[in-house]
Image (tube, rainbow, N blue to C red; front, side):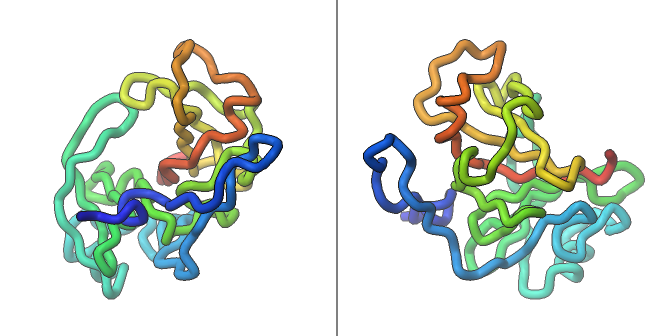
Length: 186
């Protein structure tokens, strides 16, 4: 059986008296950081393939996985360390690395964002976000501060729509970060 922490960040505590989400239990260990330049030492110049990715991430292993990007599902390579799927690496143009999706709370975003943190904890601005579509329907897709090529994808627990626009600011407060997406092209 896989623990909740292997799938996403675990949330500890309960709603506070004002309805705020409880504290996020994030890892004391950061296995990788996604920055404006890439994920760890993986950049837009990194060749796409298991050997190349593993050489850039000592101690990591890769294996093919099927993932959902916004408009489709596809097979790609995931990088694991100590049993945790840390990133999903998509193939870009010319045999190089394309998008990278960060998927564990053992990973940090450009400003310290971690999977499982809430929209309000991260301080995202609704005015800079857009509504997700297709497979990310009902999710908020927002740029990371200081890194326009990094997107933060939030899910709103229990959200029932409407799906053609962003939820209210109140609904977004408790939205949970699901994915940190780096794109080599800005």
